[in-house]
Length: 544
Image (cartoon, rainbow, N blue to C red):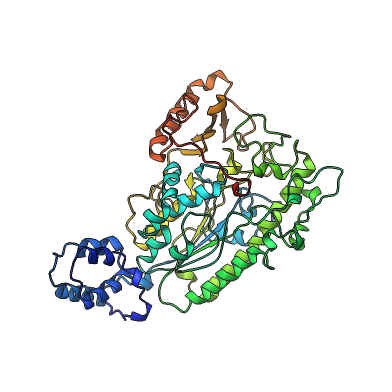
């Protein structure tokens, strides 16, 4: 057993989460016991301490017990500084097919490629959906609470009281076992990042400000009124420095700070990129001449079904009907902002290496959801096609297999319980998503037998095996795709009589997901029950 050096100056009063409640119950807490428990919080899960301390009787002196705990600390092999670090890099509106190392030869992403080569890429990672136009709110609320979609919607309404104040959000759970927590960038969660994290800078909302010139463009035969590289249009340039570069600066600074501490760190580094307005320095836009951009599959001038999001804010970025040129221009700007973000990720990876913490750090990369950018005649993410529900996702770290493509279907929110398991935090009851570790360690072949997804009460999807159904309950429409033969979902098989039983089975599996996700929709009627939750509405600026 190794002796542990006790660094009292590193202790935070809020590391010991249960002391206030113990005091309220009238228990006698001696000074040395309080000191000991704060030390224990740095190395032991909160719930473990709770169980040990709450067994003590009211009014009884705890001195003898506190010295027992101190002895446990002094000779314990489990130390806070032995816990792994977590660097979580999160992008926005980032479709799964925009990483060169994962098959897109049009785009340049050398640093995302580094992550693919250095670890395991989860090639079929999903976001579960959204309960209003701002899909990112639902995705990030699920991530921070661990709750499935409709349960997360309920949690959002009381997030500060039930999660933030009770220290049950993702970063607070890690802080409870000794982690220093850092945040920068897009938050868009109904909690205070300055409370949830120890250090938070440049906490941003849903999106940089758009301008009128940024919509309904470009129109064939007319000059383009908007320029992605001109700072006069504000957006990502607001404040004088591109927001992606600010995120990179903060992350590099955090890593330098962490290099001087013995405590493990959790960094939540959240880019607003690749959300619109899709702005990048000219050198990045110039990498992608419009004439060299391929049209997405399938290219449609307009989506043929009314799905509740056909004219939402995102869809107004390009003119109706879609033209080949307008889609290509939007895609070149999309690629440019991703490549620019990739350069900042490269800076962060170099800073991690320089910090000396790389060997004991797990890197997770993910995105809140994907984006259509021209597929199926759509521009936004408020749909159930794979380009909008799937994201790039990588895991790098000690004992993680290198250059592996893991095709088992997972959710991006599975990153949250993965870090809890690695940190030794008992999984709270509210966390429904699953740890990736059994997959990463080869202990299982799948986490989920099927993948469920939803958008408001207008769309549902269920993917199982090679097949996927998309339901539009409001209009009584069902689509069926064979993803193995038709990965871009171009050919609807629902009208083929030989698939009637398959569709029925997929619908039944979807219905089994509804209770666990809290989904109130009656799929047979196409409407929520009379006492069910109605889909929320958002203003134009919030539909992001």
